[in-house]
Length: 159
Image 1 (cartoon, rainbow, N blue to C red):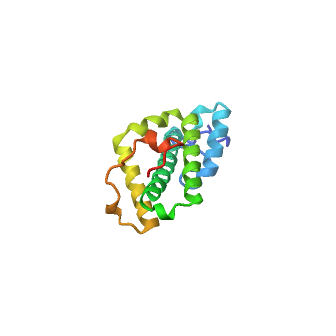
Image 2: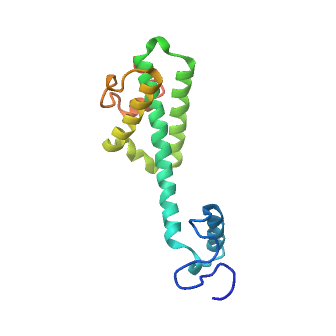
Image 3: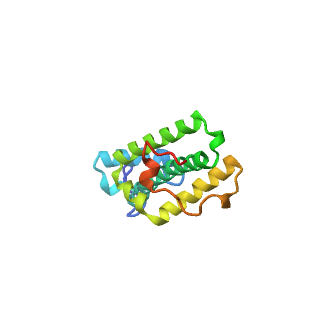
């Protein structure tokens, strides 16, 4: 127990860089401990938190991409005279990125049927569209008028 190879000083605290002091150095040390099979020396609680955070990060990225897509669909519908290649490119790019994300992380797909998640993401899309178009937030539909399948359909554009 008295060696300096990142083993625990006591029964509770791992030696090395504390999680709250330098998370990157901590992560490198924890990965090395795991690869070396030194399981008694790892910071289990913080590793568990980081693993959960990876999933939350994937969910946030997915929600962000969906919000950008829906905001551009709103702009397309509500500002027909301002339609541009930039908007259609953003719509196409977001759909492709979302499709890739769903292929790589299929556990995200149920979010597309989760009413609470859709409501949150739709609120973000309305906020973004309102900010970008100067159309009042309340002028956009309170509930998403499209199914998620429609929003993701490469042939769909609201008219």
